[in-house]
Amino acid sequence: MEIAETVESPKERGQLHYIWHLVARNPLFVIGLFIVALLLFSAFFAPYFTPYPEDATFGINFAEKLKPPSFKHLFGADALGRDIFTRVVFGARMSLKIGIIVVFVSMSIGIPLGLIAGFFGGKVDEIIMRVTDMFLAFPPLLLPISIAAALGTSIVNTMIAIAISWFPWYVRLIRAQVLTVKEELYVESARSIGVGRITIMTRHIFPNVLSPVVIQASMDMGYTILVAASLSFIGLGAQPPTVEWGLMITSARAYYLDFWWTVTFPGLAIFVSVLAFNLVGDGLRDILDPKIRD
Image (cartoon, rainbow, N blue to C red):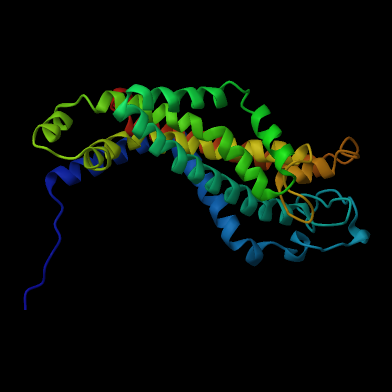
């Protein structure tokens, strides 16, 4: 009986070694990955390691009202006596959920439109880009505020509002990449042998424009977390009893000057999360962009 063995080729080993070298020489990328991994761990396993998981829902304990940070409450307690550490950890669930869904929806709309606009050009390109420019004419935060206000206050409407305001950036990004890639020799060769347009777009162009999208998506995760928290802060996002970092901050506005921990730790969670995704995005750009890599 023969045992099949998988042996890495020298080329594969060289590529893996080179990627590891790029990662190792960028400690900020490693730090960002570690923080993102910690956020994912918190989102999935929050009920198993937080001291008061009931405080993530309707837990109320007025005996612990506004207690400062201590061994019992690492981040202190809020106005209802709920453990802030528990609520910050559970808040990672909602923030990551919003980020993942918004980025996915934005990419699902923006990538096909960008491919079509860049590949076909002409009037199709003109129509798509003029509509895109209409969305981009609004300030980045004003458009989601307007849409969320029109749709009503809920997490779903928050995600819709952010996705609508952000998909045009993917349209522009993909279109710019397609305009370059479609002039490459391998695309011209595919055309010359009669390969269909759809096949050229999906098999020859699309895989070669993904690197910038991956970089942009990693950075947009931080952006969506920040915008969602901003909408919750002004009352247009998450509503009680949902645990969300922006909502935690706005709930403590009346007394944060005297009880600093009620806003400091949710604010730090937002800051660290946005920073982590930006570090990951910068690191991926260093790895995937050949101009920077070389």
